[in-house]
Amino acid sequence: MTGEEEALAAAEVVRSGWLTQGPKVAEFERAVAGYCGTEHAVAVANCTVALQLSMVVLGVGPGDEVICPSMSFIATANAIVHTGATPVFADVDPGTYNLDPEAAEAAITSRTKVIMPVHQIGMPADLDRFNEIGKKHGVKILEDAACAIGSRYKGHIIGGHSEMACFSLHPRKIITTGDGGLITTNNAAYADRLRLLRQHGMSIPDTVRHGARKVMLESYTEVGYNYRLTDVQAAIGIEQLKRLDWIVERRRAIAARYTAALSGHAWLIPPFEPEYATSNFQSYAVQLADDAPISRNDLMQWMLDQDIATRRGVMLSHLEPAFAGRPVPNDLSNSEAASAKSIILPLYPQMTEHDLGKVLSTLNAVTRSREAAR
Ligand SMILES: *Cc1c(COP(=O)(O)O)cnc(C)c1O
Image 1: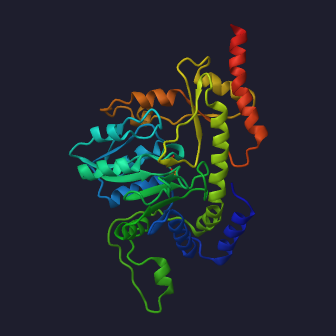
Image 2: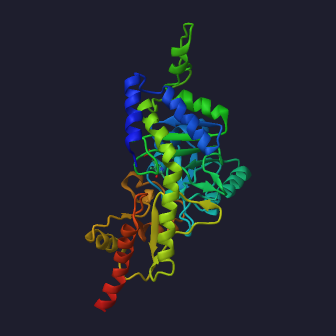
Image 3: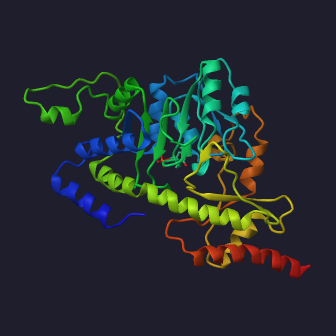
C-alpha cells in the first residue's frame, strides 16, 4: 500500500541530488532499529542478499551446512547456496508450518554452522526453542523474517531475538520499497561488517567522506559486494514504516474474522497461532482436510471463476528443478502434505466486509454444489 506520502518523499530525494546509500538510508535504518527495538538495522538491496551477507558475517562458506525448511520461498535456500554452503532441509511442524525445532536439531552434523528458521508467511517460529538448541550445539540462529516485519514473539517485535533477522521489502510483503532488505541485530561487530560488505568492502562510507573537512582516502579491506539500498527506496520505506502498525492491526482484524467464520468448517482448517506468536498475517493460508470434497487446484479454479484470486500455499524448494539432484537426507512428509493442501485466501488492509463475505460464501457454495451433485 503506497500513497501520496511515498510519492512526495521519493520526489524530494530525487530533487536533493543524493540518490543512494546516503542520509535517507541512515534515517530509515534508525527508524527500523527503533521500531524493532534493536541496536542496529542495516539496509540492503533485498532480503535474499540480506540472508547471504548475514551468513557470510557468521562465517558460513563452502563445506558448511545450514539447516532450513524446504517449505519456504526458494530464496531461503538460494541464499545459502550463494554462500557456497549446503542447504539441509528439515521438516516443518504440521500445526504452524514453521521449521520443527526437533527436526532441525536431529539434522545437525559436525558441519552445521547455522539454523535458519523462517517465520512462515508472518507467523513467528518458536525462537526460544531454537536459541536453546543453538546454544546446546554451538550453532548460530539466523531468522529468515522476510514476511515477519511487525510480527511479535512473546510480545516483542521480531528483530532482536537471535544473531540477526532479515526482512524483505518486496511489494508482496507487509511494507515495501519496491525492492529492499533489512538486517536487524544487537551485535555492533556484525552491523559494522554488514555495512562494509554491502558497499564493496570500502573502509570509509561515502556519508563520512563527503562530510569530512580533511581529505580522506578509502581502502578496500576485503572483497565485498554492491548490495546497497537507494535513498529513493529508503525515503519510501520511512513513510511505509509509519503505516506498519495500522497495516498489521487491519490484517489481524480480517484474519480474526476469517478464523471465526471458518472454525468448525467441515473441510477447511484455519491457521493455528501458538500462544507465543502474534502474526502480522502477511498471508492467510487455510488447509484442505483429507476428506475435502474438492481438490486444492479445483478450489483455486472455483474461486477464480467468481473473480477471487487465491494462491497456492508455500512452495517446496526440494521439488523445484533448481534443487533436483541434491540429496534429501531428512523426512519432509509434513512439508509435502501441508504444501499440497494449502491455499492462501485474499487478505489486504482495504478489504471490506462485503469482500470478505463474498470469499466466505464462495467457499461455502462448494459444499452445497457437491451435496447437490450427489
Ligand atoms: C520474499 C522472501 C524472501 C526473499 O525476499 P526478497 O526481498 O525478494 O529477496 C526470502 N525468504 C522468504 C521466506 C520470503 O518470503
